[in-house]
Image (cartoon, one colour):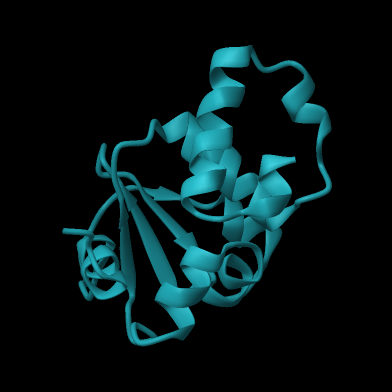
Length: 125
């Protein structure tokens, strides 16, 4: 039985006021208060902006602007932090392709798979 959108997003989304380490890259690129935190498997938290995530990812758009608009935390599982950082950097500055030229093919495959999962079309190309 296939999981519904509601089940998929509930797996990832949680309302929470948790304490954790911060990665400030999105805040440095886009100043202003963040309105969502992305929690990685290793406990790292990335403070981000729903509007920017939603502009680049159909999955984030559904989670952040759809029926889960009140979500303040989004759990990201089964992806290495480096791959997640690459995805977030791309979301915040999608026209910086130079960094991909030096990446090994194994890392590029991981990036492609996460782009496919989160439906980030510009990252897949």
